Length: 343
Image 1: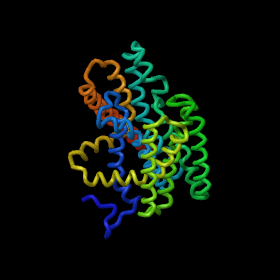
Image 2: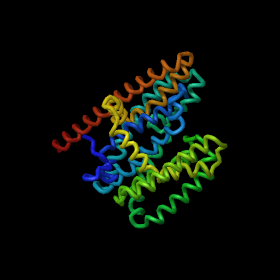
Image 3: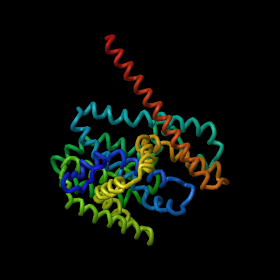
Image 4: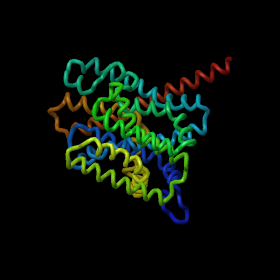
């Protein structure tokens, strides 16, 4: 039976509840991300995900910040880097290489497809996505950031907030949605640095209680209001800067709402969600390629038919990529052990 985060006699702290439901939260967030990236229709309820769905990525980064703290505490720095990068790079290389080969075999003759997918040699290591760049950078700086947060938490908050504001007023408006240039990578990464750091800070301090959760909820409501204002009026840089900063502070409440939702979710939906959590990385790596390619190549087909086909192909591709990576990891581990025995 799922334990209630607010149960009076057996109260779970926010960190305990988040750790307990981590995989389930990732499942819901991954589903939100791919619904946000589906290019087939903007009808209800899909327009909701076009509006708010990109926050699913922020949930992933927040959870990564929390999880990385435990990894830094548990392992030496060398082991930490090995575990972090070997988790993400094999899937990136496999999925990216397959996309690159398929695109060059079938896609280069279609100019629109080539322009929309932006496939290049960097795709072979998964670096055709801003998220992969960003998470690798966060993995690299996390041990140093962990030390700085512990020694000077207030200075860390001030510096990150200052860096975030400067980035939001200068770099991000300049690069827009370009994530392949060095400026674009820098802009997208700094924009997500507050939410990643918030995850680390909460995991380090372990002091989030109901009172702090209440303050977080206020910031989440503020982020939603600002997002609505952005939709209703002409966007301007200051408003967009405030949205992501308030969301970072409000992220614990968004996590809590997700946990509350999961406690009352039917088992059928949980079974559907489970796949998106287990294969979240692989789904993220392949879904954009499949969605966009099908939309361009089969534009004449009804989106209500094309969309489920794209989802099925995405799930199958992610499943087989994950199985191949797991098999390669097992074989590599077996060969490594055999070499050690022979030595």
